[in-house]
Length: 422
Image (cartoon, rainbow, N blue to C red; front, side):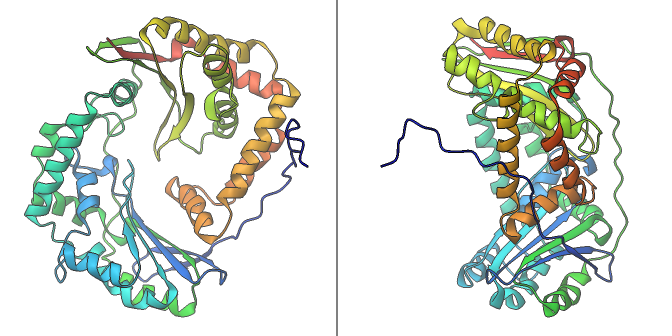
């Protein structure tokens, strides 16, 4: 019988193995990164364009353009596209991020050749029907109306706006006025300018073959080569302050403490990635153990290190009762000070290292997961091999280095402090 009073043995992860992608290049200059395996009879095709917020001529147009790509082409209506995908047991997603326009196809290998022409038409010949844009605007206006009464959403929108600025692509918030200002002509202008071969990359994973690469050339080689998009905004820093926003009749207050950091290629990124995990990046973190487990002020508290292609930010977030606002803020800064003043214990650091290495094992489990990890590197214009540098940092970072990073970044004067409550 298992003795459940004893914790299971923790086996140390000493290495992480992953498939290195093979590079091809289409005639229109689009790089294709292939991760081939025959373990699963599926194919994932992930096409992304540098066509997010930094490349907009009007606020909110990038997200609308990405969302409406599949809502009608020169040959197919949105209903016909959905029926074809459903008939072949395939799925097509258009996830939105700040920097890129993404279109992702999942299908069985045997259906790839049949579906690729449809995929190609979606990414080369969308017509952005007026009625679909109107529905997009209506749906998102309703979502904004719902979210404006959520303290956590209000706090997130406020902290990012304060860190980057109200007119910065990473800082501005979606608005009803911005939605209503969008037109079909805006979407077409953004699409024609940014959805070109010079701004695109392809990641192909699963049960592929040489014929698959030939098919990509035949169809996606049609994407116009175009010109590379430029980024027309600056990266000025705003002096942080404390912000209190009143929301009547809410039961909890939302707290966000954040600061501008850097993009993923910064030399301190890997170390700060580990430090973030220690402070609030997993269930056993310092903030969770203190503010949730010991004090009982909140159900959840976290810290996050978010990176975009051209910048990044670090923040702490939680929701608490109004009576615990100031105590929670005090304890957050106390945990930061502890990391600045005291060396991390060997057992705690080893636990965090094991947790992060275990996450990496999951990240590289199978070609479809590997493609996601690889995409994150390509999006940030970094070679895949730099993942080995992250692994090395996780395995070898010392308590002294953690303390040094804490003193460099976890200083109260660096942080915007946002509290949303009644």
